[in-house]
Structures are given as structure tokens and as C-alpha cells.
Amino acid sequence: MTYHSPGRGNRISRTAGQNRQSQGTGTRPPALLAGLVLVLVLGLFSAVNPGNAADRPEAVNLVQNPGLEEGADLPHCFSRSGWGSEGAWAVAAGRGGGRAASVSIAEYVSGDRKLLQTESPDCAPAVTAGTGYEMEIWYQSDVPVTLTAFVHGTSGWSYWGDLQTFPASSGWSAARKQTPVVPPGTTMMSFGLALAGSGTLTTDDYSLRAAAPPQETGPPGRPESSIRTSLPDPDRFRSASSPQAGGRTPCPVP
Image (cartoon, rainbow, N blue to C red; front, side, top):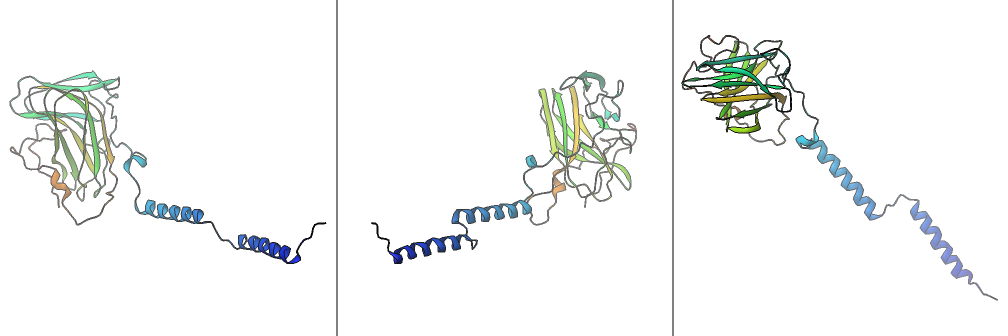
């Protein structure tokens, strides 16, 4: 005969009941609590920091006919611009097939030649004042070339500045630069690569996209200082639509 101690059995029963009761009170194991805290912290961090550019959807390309495929000899919504030494224009093989635009200067003396978006509401990219933009043009060139921008404001079209000079490249290379924030009153922009030397420049795949807002805050600065607006010759830049017009006045930047 097996003898069972009533007291011991009661203690065992009470212990089991207490265990069941503690499990029903909502108590969580430490590992689960740590996981919940981590999720909350990561959620708060994501709300404060929107993430890297690679995590965001790509902004819309504001350039019409960016691959230069539409149009006859001259791509639709683009204009040949420049002054000084004459340039010979031609259609060339594109970066990924299709076609590109090419300009050559045989005996450079002065000036430049460049392909810009046509300065009209139907063709020039519309921009928003106070926003920065990512410019990109793919190119091949046997001499250095300069990324140049023009803007349209309350006083019409004007030269904004040279953003950056890029080295000669025998293969396709991207001329890429983010602009400062667009000045107040600006509604449109036109840009291109300027050839200012004896050589050949071929361009393709133009893009202009709104840049993501800065992720860090700090004291106010003057980001527009990265654009050079002082020119050795006031007639260096002329209108794409009126190549023989007078020189441009730099767009006032606050």
C-alpha cells in the first residue's frame, strides 16, 4: 500500500495553482519585454530619421525627353546654346542604345557650346523655390566639361552658375551634382554640360530630381556658395533661345 501525505499533496496542489495564477496575471518573460522595448525604440528612431536615400523611392525625373530619343536631328525640348567658337553638332550612339547628342569644336578661341532644355514652360523642368535638386548628365568627352545652370524667376531667364567641372572621360561617365536650394521666385530651370575647348562632347540621359531634405540640423549657412557666379566675361553665357542676345545677369541669391 502506498501512503500519500495529505499535507504534502496540498502543498503541491497549491504550488501548481499559484503557478497557473501567476501566468494569468500578464507577467512576461524578460526576453519578451526586452524585445518589445527594442521595437518601440526602433519605431521612434524611424519616425525621427526617415532613412537613407537608398530606402526612399526615387524622385520623379523632371526632364522631358531625357534620353534624347524624341525629335529629328535636334532632340525634342532641347536647344543648342553657346557663344564664341562655333560648334559642329551631330547625332551619336546613346549610352544604352538609341542615340545621344554630340558637339565638336575644332579650333577653340573663346566661349562654349552646350545642349540645354528649351527655355519654355512646355519644356523646361518646373522647380520649387527652397528645394535642392540632383542634376545628372551622362557624358563622354576628350576635354574637361562644366555643369551649368540657368533659372527662370520674376525677371525672366538668367544665368545661375557653374556647379562643377568634370574631367575628360573616354567612356560613359555621370556628371552628377546637387544644387543649393532654389532661390525665391524661381519657377523653372535649364541645365547642361558646357564644352569650352577644342574637342568633342557627347551627352545622354539627363535627369533633374528633387533632393531629399537634409537629415541633420545645424546653424543656418549659405549652401548657395558652392555655385560660382563670378564670370571673367559678362557675355559668356547667352540665352539658349536667343544665342545672339546680350550676356546674362546672375540670378540674385539671398
